[in-house]
Image (cartoon, rainbow, N blue to C red; front, side, top):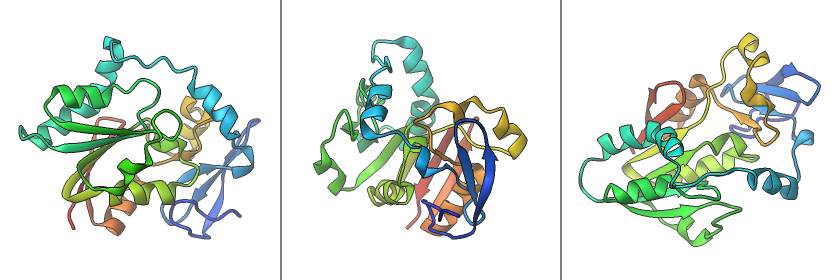
Amino acid sequence: MTPCPLCRSQSTALFFEDRRRQYVRCGECALIFADPESRLSPQEEKAHYDLHENNPEDLGYRRFLARLADPLRERLGDTPLDGLDFGCGPGPTLSLMLTEAGHNMAIYDPYFANKTEVLGTQYDFVTCTEAIEHFYTPAKEWGQLVGMVKPGGWLGLMTKLAKDADAFAQWHYKNDPTHVSFFSRETFHYLAQRDGLDVEFVGNDVILLRKTQ
């Protein structure tokens, strides 16, 4: 069976299968990941993202992102801080919202803002909304995310959380062909313990982690 792309464990097993692809679950970190053979090519993936209509002027999109922005801002306080939005997409909006709140923001996206120079520094906080489920090599990207957070800083994530097999079978989130890595509360507890983070779940899809070391 394919090793886990997040924790490298060999303890993986088939979790679910449908007409589209197979999904494997790691017995160590509980990540569920799509069969690598079913991944889109970079060109196909980019074409799918080009269909997204994310717009900073869209109030509905701002309300969606506020589910992360608001609780994060409460924890950051009023002092201007340096942040990075990782995976900002074609219409960077969260970074704008946090800039409007007084923070200094950088952005990165492998397709739409491929400014790799911003990955070489540390920030007071890093955000990643609706992107972590797209990671083909989550061990690499997770290491980047954690490594870019200063000690005592925050990592704010938004992604839908996987549940049990019955729920997964009915879960629309898995049907997006660009969604390949599915995290659960168990996965984030594993990562928090391994990497020196405090973890807090806000609602159904917001995860706030504070770097304790």
